[in-house]
Structures are given as C-alpha cells and as structure tokens.
Length: 232
Image (tube, rainbow, N blue to C red; front, side):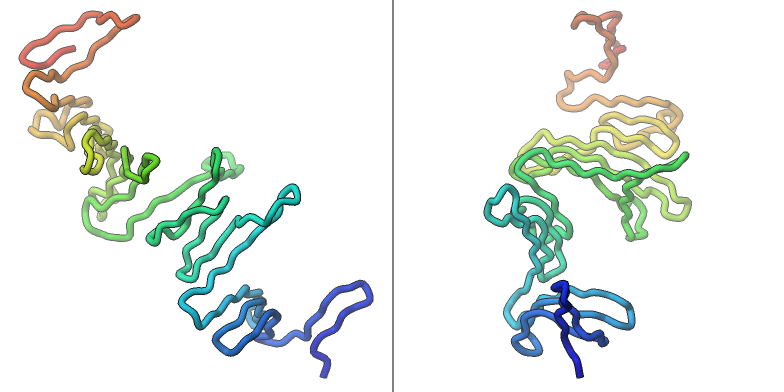
C-alpha cells in the first residue's frame, strides 16, 4: 500500500488517514511534527515529550542573520510573541520587542468597528477588570478599573488609580459612578446630599490641604478663594 509519494514537481504527498503523522518520532510519548485529523479536517502541530516540558517555537531570519525567535507556545499553553520575550509564569499571552511595540485592532462598519473586552466571570458585586500601567521593573504605577457594582442590573463604574508610595499598590483617586457623577479623592458619596452633586472633590493628605478648583492663565491664578478648606 502506498504511504508516501514525491511527485515530479518536488511535492511531498502522504497518504491521508485519520491521525496520520509526519515528523520526528521516537516513541509513543516523545515526537514532534504534524498530525492530520481526518474527521475535523484539522492540521495539528505536535511536540510531545516525556521530559518536563515541550515548547513549540517559530523562528525567522532577517537580512541573512541568525534565526530569531518570533513566537513560542509553551508547554503550559502560554503564548509569547516578539524578540525573545521574557514571560512570567502567570501570563497567558505576552508581547515584547526591543523597540516600540504596537498592537492594532481594526474593523470596518458604520457603527462599532473594533472593541477590546475585559470580562470578570465572578458574579460578586464590585468584581472588576483592570488596565494596569507598569514601570520598567514591572511594578504597577497606575491603573484604570471597570467595576461591576451590580451584577443583576449590569451597573458599572470607572475608577482611576495612581501610586505615591513604594510597597503599596495604586490607590483610587477618581471615580465616575453609574449615574455619571465624578468623585475625586473619594470612592463614592459620603452623605445623602453629596449623592446629588455632579462633581465632588475631597481634600487628601494633611489638614492644610484644600479641596477646590483653580482657573489660571500663564500660571497666574484667576479668581481663586478659600472658605473652610474649600476653594474655587
């Protein structure tokens, strides 16, 4: 029975069968190559090892240089893309390059064309998802959180966090509530009256701090005033 054919034009053809394998084969637990699934019409890239791990790595050559790693699927399922990225163990998908690194999501429609969704599957009230901004050491310096305040009614709020102390995570500095009200240096209304105000600013730090808004032109304060620790 024919198993393999090299055609006159140099093509290599393997007889099709469910689970047919092409590659390097050592034993039933250690091989790498391609497996063909007839039922699902699927091509599988396999790297099965009886060692502690077996990654799949894609490399390319540019300008006759040495091959460089561009993509890796680790044995635990983590994926890394870029120029030899360093991947943390708890990172599922990692993109890294030596220069400016851009990711673009593009669509074309008269309404919403492109969207990035963050979903927290925990149904607890105030469960949240987050965009985090890190320094060169990987420490989070600021963040934007989307908070699911009411899972039943699908209510949500936005919180903006910054960090001003070493060893502490970023703290919430501003929140936009489900009704569009803004709280600065406060996580929400502190009194029933405050709940009806569109903008609420609370002083932070020492007792000498003031909560207020100043209007200026060329660094000159215009029309400022202070009463009881509050100014505008």
